[in-house]
Each structure stands twice: as structure tokens, then as C-alpha cells.
Length: 408
Image (cartoon, rainbow, N blue to C red):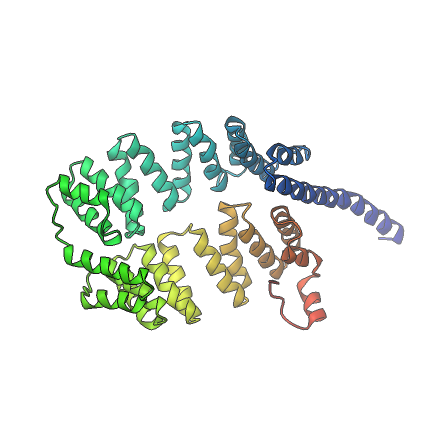
């Protein structure tokens, strides 16, 4: 190819690319103005900034307009934009979750239930959505429909106060008295003077709990903890220790962690996790001392055990992605970050790390696109701005004579 033709080709490429980058910069500037107006509660001004981009085919624009119209009090218009975002990215959770805000205010429960069920098709273990569906059915007195959703949450988070209390009353309303009694007693371990749980036991003629010794020990433990005496809070449970009690081991794991006794904390959390293998909260507990002690191998194993139960857990995918990124296993890290951005395509943390992981595996065009999206969420973001100035990896490493690690 001669120099004249090369020159013509370069000119054509510039004419093609420059308008694209001009549009990107225009979008970033529009989002910056929109965010500033939102901070001042000027929602219509914030909306206008996005509408002036005049592009309804962009997922992020529809998602943002859905949020802004909801904040402005225009619920029906908000729904319209959230629905458009859902159509553009049907496997994303964030627009379906967003849809729930205006739908709830409009009392459009049929469409809210529809979206919640679609969320659970994508992410069956989503705690908030399982809870939301359960509560919709519960308050509509459809207790049989509410039960499996409360049970799902209880399986993963057995010591969640609100869910356990609602599960207890659901069982009571379904004449499952033994289950109701069990869960009311769990509530009393969490909140020893809880009026609702005591009322439930009284109604069933169980005013004297069969679990009173443990409840009393937990009550004393909370009193000591409130007085900032964590050692006494732990000792009162140790004096009444029951190795078969999931709740006691979970509580002792937390208290010994607060005392800086990380090996002991890990042991208690491990027992809790063994007692209830499907419990995510116990595994999250195991991760606390492992992280404090800097045991990355153990931490990785714990995160993987959580994903074996809850593969769509974006918090854990993000944390595991960071572990692989630190080990410079960028391709593996990218898979976990992409899981986050698939479910939450306009999430700051997921986008930023996905951008850097793409950069590290030489996906420069994808990295640039993601860095610009980060700037839409966080105008002037230092890390994203740095990423946009970086040269290809090998060239940048020669300049710096070191490995590239995501800037703080």
C-alpha cells in the first residue's frame, strides 16, 4: 500500500473515531451535570441533562432516567424507563430491582411480583428479593405462598431477626405449631425480650420457653456487650456453651473476633458452618478472622464455598475477583468481575475492576469503554482517568519498569 493510500486510510479512521470519542466525552459531561443537579434535588434538571443526549437505545440512560423520574415523583414514567432498561439487558438485576421502587408506590403488586420472580430466575438465592416476595404474600395473608421464600432466607441466614420472626408467624398461621415455637425461640436468642416472639409463644400456651437457659445467657451477653465488656459477653456464653448450638457458636465467633482472638473466632465460626452447611452467614463469619490474619488461601476457599451455594453472589464474586487480581491472575479475576457487571451493569466497583482486568489482558477497547462508564458514575475518578492515559501493558511496564496494579 503506497503512502497516499495510507494517508487516506488514516484520515478516514480519524473521521470515524473522533465523533465517537466526542460523543463519549459529551455523555460523561452530561452525567456529571446530572449528578450535580441531583445532589441539589433538582431532579428535572438532572433528567434534562440525560434527555439532551437524545439516545434512548443506551441502557445506562434508561436506568438513570428510571431512577430520576422515581425521585421526582413520576412513578409511571419511571416504570417506563426501567422497563426499557430491562429490555436492553434482560439478564441484569439492577433495572428489575429499580422497577420495584415505583411499582411499590403505585401498589402495582402484580408487576412487582412478576419482576421479583424474574430476579429469582436469574439469582435464586437473592436474599432481598426472597424477603420482599415473602412479605408481599405475608401481608396479603397468603401464608402458604410466603412460606418457601421465608424458608429460603432462613436456610442461608438462620440468625436473621426479621426473617426468623416473620417465618415463625407464618408457621403459626399455617398451624405448623412446632416450627413456629422453634423459630420464636430463635428470635428470643437474638432479642431476649422480644414482645412479638413472646406473644406468639403465649398464644400457643408456651409462655415458658424450653430454651430459657440459653436465652438468659444470651441476654446477659448482650448486657455485657452493651457495656463494652466483650470478654464478659463471651465468657457468659462459654459458661453455658452448647457445641450443638449454631447460634451460640455464631455469637462466640463474633465476640472472640472483637477480642482479637482470631484463631478461636475461626474455630467457632467453622463449627457453626458445619452445623448448618447451607448457611452463608456462617461462612461470611469464617471469612472475618481469615481476612484479619491475611490468610488469602483460606479466604479464597471460603469465598468459593459460598459461590458453590450462591454462584450469583456479587459481593463474593467481587471479593474473589480482587484476590485473583492481587495474584496477577487477571483472566480469572475478569470472570468474577464480569459476573458482577452482568447482573449490575452500572455498578461503580464492578465496572472499575472489570476495566482494569480487561486492561491487564490486553482488551484495551473494552477497558476504555468501561473506564468512561466509571466516569459517568464518578466524574473525574482518579483511577478511571489514570486508566485512560495508560499505554498498552507491555509498553507501560517498560515506562514504569514494574507491574501495573490498579491505582488506588
